[in-house]
Image (cartoon, rainbow, N blue to C red; front, side, top):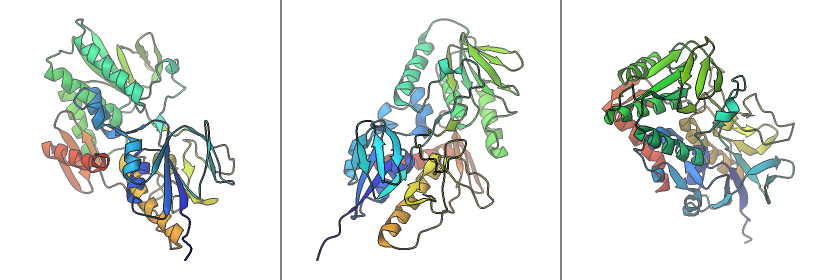
Length: 376
């Protein structure tokens, strides 16, 4: 009996979706899997704030992808993908080309820096990049130890990332008995409150945590310019800073030149009900880089949770494709939101279940460990 040759599966992106997919396909047996990622690390982005304030070591938020792939019967290439030739089924990198039978695009998203803000290029440092993250951690530690007054950290963006960073920093100042006259935290969100468009339960508890820790909040005006260590607001107000974080939003990076592949304004791929490119049924797109909608036709916000769910669904559909079975429709929905409120405090909304305080913190850490334990 002639043994069938394994199909070649190439996965671009070592984030939540890509690493989850590899774990799910570990025992597939009929696939030769190669993961391509620009850096050698998988970064646990949901715990970045814990690392920045010095409470979590780098080894707990960054995991070696070569070790991980080897453990899960896959290969790893640390390289940048420049383009994809969908007709020839080839992935083009800086120094080589890799062919595939099946392809998964899970390249995630990078921080978004609006060009409407004057001079923003000078301060466009992406906390999703490992080197930048390490520099920010060092800069925060230095600022804590500098013996002078009127220091300030400005955080532009009151979404999940901005909130968790601001609260963690403020908690660290409290632990070290550093007064707001010495070092203060300023959170800038142009909408009327933090966590725009989120459930009022999450918003109210998070707002209270900010106020309890003395975070200065600026709402109702947008940032017009960043210059000379100052944030200029649309109402002409000026906010001084010694350290600034721009966490305004995210957008995917466009790297495909094929004009027949549909991409939206955020550089997300338009996918079918199985998370495939409509014109290339052998190509799946997962996580932040895929445009997906819920049952009501509303866009689903990209989260680590959804990326992992995409990874699990794609594993089923890839194996079904290889074996000639029917595919499973993408009807995934976000199961809840968990927010660290600094220290051992959190607020969670999991379906209809509301949690806050230490118990919410324990649940959040447990859910996080389910992901990080894959790498240990």
